[in-house]
Length: 214
Image 1 (tube, rainbow, N blue to C red):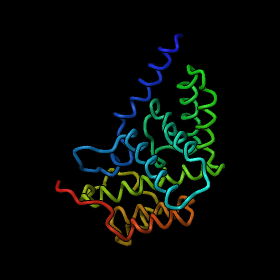
Image 2 (cartoon, rainbow, N blue to C red; image 1 turned 135 degrees about the vertical axis):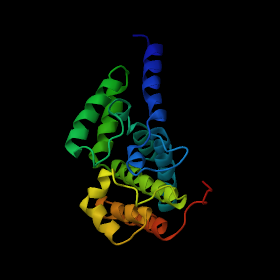
Image 3 (tube, one colour; image 1 turned 30 degrees about the horizontal axis):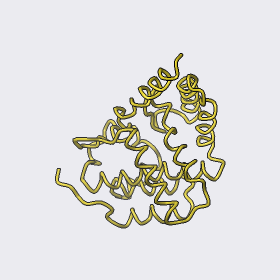
């Protein structure tokens, strides 16, 4: 196959992420004219990585981190955006890895790109762990922004499977707001270091975006 066709094929596949809405926001019945796509999440997490590297001076290869984050959702072009409450970690890993292998098999550098994707997924190297924390915190920060806009009504979550999660139930029973609940969930579930925890705490205790009129 011609190199030109390989370029177009890869671009077209990745372009699907512009139209795949983040499943978590759909589960929470976020009421907003535009809801974040997977492609927009990728942009957001890359910008967060740049800021975290800048302010906390992490000893990481930021270009490698940005490359990892650029491709970390590749599998969703085929399997869609599945939350941790819809599929087990093992099932998602298997189907996602198979999807990524298929997507990259047509590129000359496909093997190297796939290795970078698998490195991110393993969360072992310092770049992968940094990128993973950025990925999780970005979601929590976006939740905070939506909450400040008043996009979610916790009394209208009858069909939301996330509400059945034991930790979510515990936090909800204590009367926390949606974003406060979710930021604390992240702090208790994800391996944030002290810097990521500090940013999460700041978001928990402060308004971080300008409120918009719906």
